[in-house]
Image 1 (cartoon, rainbow, N blue to C red):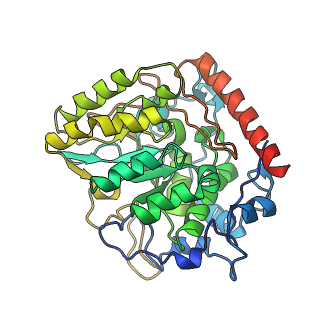
Image 2 (image 1 turned 90 degrees about the vertical axis):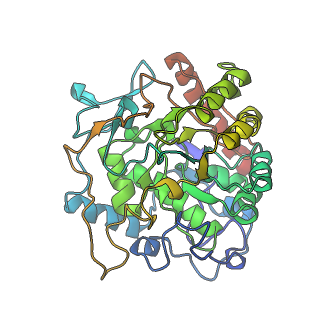
Length: 412
């Protein structure tokens, strides 16, 4: 268990949440559940809020993650979905020697009943491709000290992006978060709280990773509850994606091209190589449209997008956020119903619905690079990403040590 001083529960906010009014559905809408949607009931903020600020949260909550007191409303929603047969009974994976999650008893990860994205399977409702001629602009792993130049560039070019944020990074970089949310009016999405391989987690752990990230986003935005998530390392299966969807209304977003910019944090790749890949996609075929895996993890990953944006712009792409490329004008195609009385449509993930990777998509599994991410501690430490299994093991060990060290610094 990793010691983390970071739990932002419903009674707290990173800033003065009351001073951040909810944004009406409009040009930047679509990334959060509309007021009154049943999912929003799971994230009611306590009133009155205590004095705001990062130190308030750090002082109030320190201990292991996930915490023992997961909100009962989340657990009840999970139990109800399980009782209704909406959460497949798929065993938890363990990390194998090749650096990838493996199922027990030689269970086939590509079987439609499992449908592991790590091994190149997608399920109905997964978002991999954008419409023809469209780029779904998104960045992972923020908010971090390396993020502001990206946000400044996006705003100066009248661009909006979807940011898949890590919960603990929001906690330790609240002002950077507010630059994306308030200044840029950008979209915020879930990238879990501690960036684990999600198929290695129990149902309750999955619940905590998604729930606490959604909670800290809601607490930091005046109550807006996100609707999209991207699994760390691209690792999800029918069990994980069903918990995300059935409990929290989260759509699983993958990608169809991997820039490998996450390797710039180490020595695995050069900036020139990353930029060459981006330029080839920006100037290449427009069918299917692009959802490229990009990061705000390092100065290099940010610079790669900034340097290649002129090519993207010159080639006439339509550039939108993830909700913009979700292929449904309502931008809520994954919800069963808007409220308790509106008609419901069945979209449950059930065994036997998985399919191979859609045309044009690059799976995150063994045939391509898998992603790792940086977790921000109180000292803003970063951990490089690496493809090899040996490097993954070293990275995982370093991540645990850095996280514990950050927690101890906070508690001291």
